[in-house]
Image (cartoon, rainbow, N blue to C red; front, side):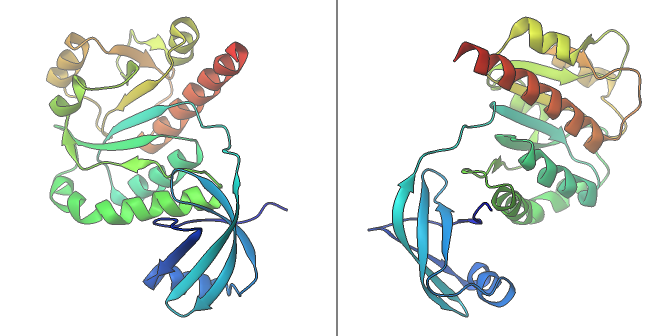
Length: 244
């Protein structure tokens, strides 16, 4: 059975500590005890560690050994327009499970009114969701959940192949683009529930992004994000392994 993994802020002199709410979760919910062995990560290195002390608001780990890093997912940045927060949080959790490297929330013309004002207060909650999902699926690194940005703020600085999902006719199938381009990294751009405004679509296209399609089905934003991530990860990981 696979060991559970926990993220710690730092590992210093082979010791790591969790305080406050995170420690309480381990001691009160998971009921961890001294002597139990888990994997821990400081978001850079993976370790095998033993619990040295478990109190209400303090859990101390003692490193037993460094572990070999697990293969990293294919690098994908998801730039996604804000939509209803309960759906958005579900998307963060599932995108983390699917190996996303970073999530960039965006405010766009058709973002639901008021979400951009509430989003900054949700940022830490979103990062917590990403961390908990990473622990659950035993990722070595937590995806970065970035501060809210505008569409114009991300168009020029994207990494790897720049791909956007366009619900209008004419977009190339996403899988076809991946198989032909074989990029080493992807930035994926996803619009709001109401779709891209015409002005935004023009700006994205003029910035050189590749318009792609997931087919003729009408998908909710969070469903489209999962479908696109699955295709990009599967395709990118497959040809990366073929080159190894």
